[in-house]
Amino acid sequence: MKRLSIGLRLTLWYLGVFAVAQIIFGVGMWFILRENLHDIADGALATEVEDVRRFLEGQRTDGTLADLQKTVTDEYSAETGGDYLQIVDGDGNWIYRSPALAEHNFPAISPSLLRKRIHKDALLGREPFRFVSQRIDVHGRAFTVQAGTSTDEEMGTLERFRVYLLMFAPGLLLAAGAVGYWMSRRALSPVDALTRTARTITGNTLSSRLEQLHTGDELQRLSDTLNEMLARIETAFTRVTEFTADASHELRTPISLIRTEAELALRRSRGDEEYREALRHILLEAERTTSLIEELLALARADSGRQSLNIQPIDMRGTLQEVASGWRAIASVRGVQFSERILDAELRVLGDAEALRRVVNILLDNAFKYTPAPGGMVTLSAEERDGNALISVHDSGMGISEEDQTRIFERFYRVDKARSRELGGAGLGLSIAQWIVQQHHGKIQVESTLGAGSIFRMALPLAAANVRKELLTR
Ligand code: ADP
Image 1 (cartoon, rainbow, N blue to C red):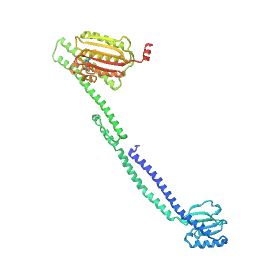
Image 2: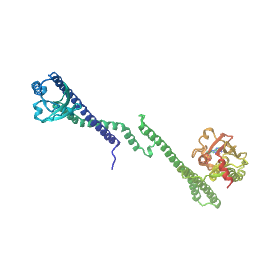
Image 3: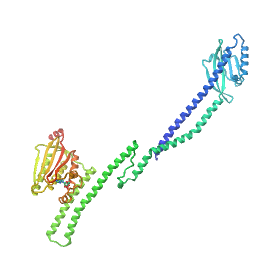
Image 4: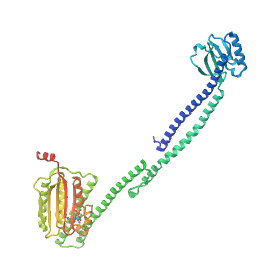
């Protein structure tokens, strides 16, 4: 079942609460009005009883019952005030009974049974009446005075009040519903606007943002949060698009080189040596392409979070020595002086040996690539400092300008594109190195002077003492 909109639900709730409030108010007011009308009638009846008491007090005390009956009858049958009056004494003798009450045989109450004044609503014929029954004591004798007054008018007023209430209630309810609906629509209209804009946002329009609200409430927080989310998505999306574009671009160059080389070789028949030379070029480019694809894959896996490192306690010193021994031969072939300053103690870190080896290889590869031979110098050093294993690769090469130092860790960034490519780099090495170091909760930094050389420093947190102990006992 489709749920009603929030605006409609709010309106219905509002209507419900308003209707209940209206009923409570109407019924309450009706009772209050009735009480007030009763009070007015009761006041008049109390005066009438008081009047009877005063009249009886004014009579002789030695007269007979018949005398008393006669005087009271004379007095009250002449007056309109006695139309609905009856008086009875303690022995059950009627002192006075108006014809109207006699006709309806209005029940008498003995004064001995009356503790306090009793009020009662009753119908005489079809007319509504309000009665009071009260005991009065005069000259040592007890009487019950019962007086009534018509409440026809009061009942009419009450009835009219009820009709007005019933007449206006639906209208009021309708008006309240309309106002409630309008208010909820107004309060929720920014949500509609947000929805409309959000619907128009696609992969091509990720730079657009939802309407900025300045309401200072939940809706503003919602739109701000959604906009922040959009900004993050846009950044991630741009990164992916740029990465794809750059990757395709990088792949195109070696492939077209391979193609050109093959086309040239096939254009006319050549000697064995020429074919071999062409094939050597093709092989070199194919190798470069393979390593480029590997780098791209590594970064793509890192982005997707699928590249998981095999973190274990390792001795970094051993890893460094292994890597260094591989570079010694290359250094001598290139005519660059290579020295190692690796401390003579264990450097225990929690890490992926393979990945860390890759980082050191990237740094050394760069150092050798960008250091001219002969006379160039590359140093690999490792020490323990402030709870970190500090590994540095120092070269006396061409150096990096300050401006470039801030960008060399970006993907595909190369200071000198032509030169870097010639040396086999696509500008991915340092971004891969940075990703690996960050995964180890470490830091990688560069310090360089143009023309004088560079130092790349990587700091990896040393494994805690308890991990080391565990290692030793293995
Ligand atoms: P590449 O594979 O092109 O070397 P990197 O990401 O490893 O890519 O390095 C990015 C750029 O930083 C390089 O193209 C180069 O211009 C510069 N660079 C890196 N290391 C050094 C260094 N030791 N000396 C001078 N320039 C360097």
